[in-house]
Length: 113
Length: 112
Image 1 (cartoon, chains in turn green, red):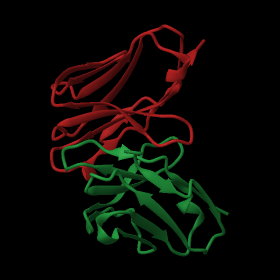
Image 2 (tube, rainbow over the protein chains, first blue to last red):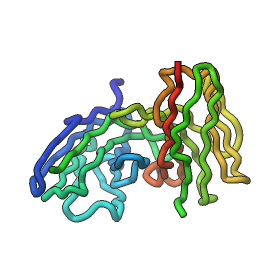
Image 3 (cartoon, chains in turn green, blue):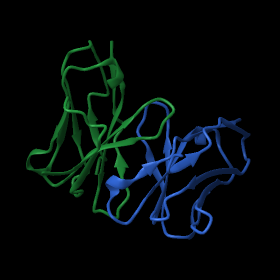
Image 4 (tube, chains in turn cyan, red):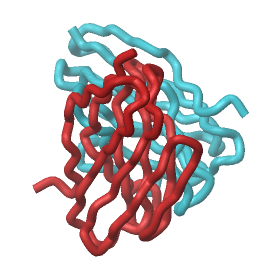
């Protein structure tokens, strides 16, 4: 068990470009979550999957954001037409079931210039 | 008013001190209470996980939950410089991890 893995660790992009992040959860966990964290704040929920089904999306997830989890394994989070306000740490977490705690990866730090 | 309130600190203590970290919350539906440790440029790492009220101890760490006061605490005994990090409290109702709400975190510095 290598924990939750995220790639890339850091992404620098210019405003207006599209970016995609990948998350590989702990293998036996069927729930996968995306959170966003800005400096000095705790993580904020974006969306979550149970297996391949996306079951909940936060109002923070604008139309420019899309997440997928094909085959219920890894997940991708895409941001289209990035804006400077998208600069943040994007964290992926997984859990065994609904009453189990979240286990986080080390995040992807996005910088939009 | 935020659902979860946590003093951002920073909190600076000498090595060996007992550290007390706290959070208050407003939603009485919260049943699961967690503490995470986050080092700079890393993801949050789960430290303690408790259900409902009471105490839980794990090594140098003790978590306390007082649901009547809507108040949770994390105590660190014999603090070490390696404990220097941001500590996030988190809580959720029993209806799914996606409803986990985090505090803003308290920055802790343990001086050698």
